[in-house]
Length: 365
View 1 (cartoon, rainbow, N blue to C red):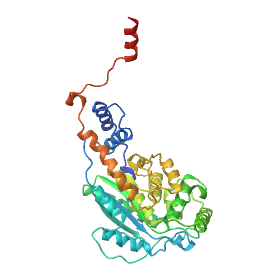
View 2: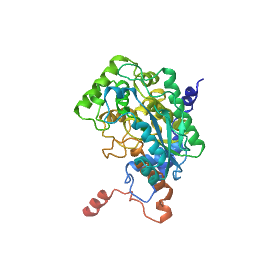
View 3: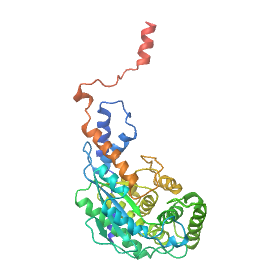
View 4: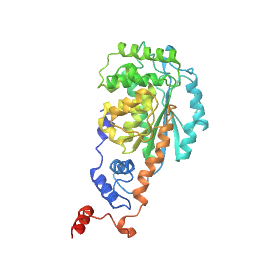
């Protein structure tokens, strides 16, 4: 059995007993039932993921998977490919948006080089797991071989497994790779059997001509690679990116270790789609951090059955939306852990009698 097969087999359903306890506890908290809305639902699901309820969420990490893309040769990005390694260095120096937001959320940042086309110096926060120097130009050739796709997924699995062993309880996933919204759009189009126009957006902010080139590149990739939309490894190998594969691995590894996994935007959710194709149970462990401004992200979230926590028109990537949503995930776990119950606080619960009926009876008397 391969490492991937082992991890897929290790992903179990949510703990229904823990969820039942959490649901009962929610009903006893000093608030009207359902008054905390989706935070209550999230708290119950966190109990199912973790196998326990009423416990604050522990340490968190943001995993930023990075790789380059050959499809940049098609003029699909407003920025040159050299920006990928430059931004990785910025992450490691602590100067990017994700560093600021992760610090605010009390999360560490781990960068995974799974396919950056440039040399990177060793760093304590850098995981060197490079499969190759960037993916192929998907408009003209496969992004990678099936073997390379499996290696990229495995790299993400190992990162998630290591973080779990270190006591990390929440894993947020982000991405870095110039050209990767093009690859993400191709993955989403294939997995969701959608047309390019339904999934392609402006990414880094391309103009109309750039958007036309991006649409053409995704359309060419889909024509070239008639993949089975149910074959996650094939979709990744033909149309994806190395960091998208690593994100899929992080998602799988998090689920196998019963860790909540918070998704960022379009490329991160494309990685989660690959993971869900390989192991459908992973979707129960996912939280959609936000809804990206990218058109295809909405389709990917719908395919996964996820409702995002935030909608701020973000399109930066890096894990920024996931880091912001981490505050809400922590809040969902903290509320049942620290709120008083009706019995402990001496607060009267909701009346059980039919008040309207009682009033009517009184009037009649």
